[in-house]
Image (cartoon, rainbow, N blue to C red; front, side, top):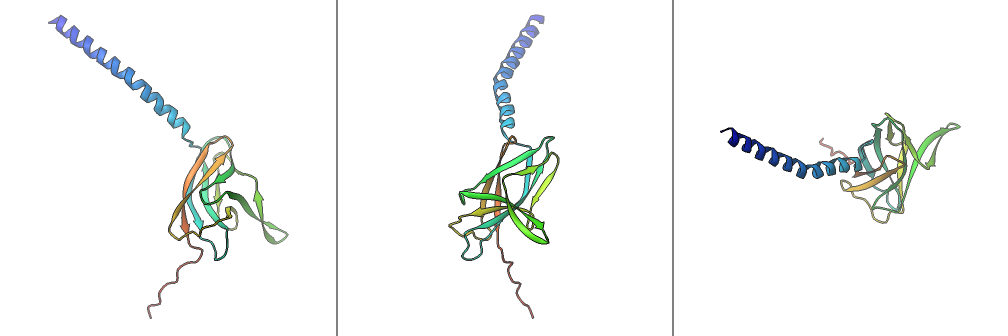
Length: 167
């Protein structure tokens, strides 16, 4: 009886050891994959405006939060919509609102930067095709050392729809 239990335990421990060794590469791959997925920046509220008639440029807005303990510098952006995207910022200078191009945008550790009208925004130039309200597209932000971040942009109309009069 003792020998039978001993053999069963030996077989079970061998099976467990074999199963563990088969799982080890899979677990290691998961950890490696997680490291490849950037997690320093969280992007929310992303949208892009439709273009005014006759215009070949538009603007996108979003919120970027840095959840890490080190700064992230957004260096550039890419999109299937165009080959020219720039970061801009509105600033008050001598009582006037001026827009200037930014080479990069710093997202300091633990901070949030809101790209919104009258502040930071992302300009899309050389747009050949009009955007339709409700469509979706994508933009990818490239950073210095924090990875690349792709996010979906909802297309929103520049003009709000008129409400029907019910009088």
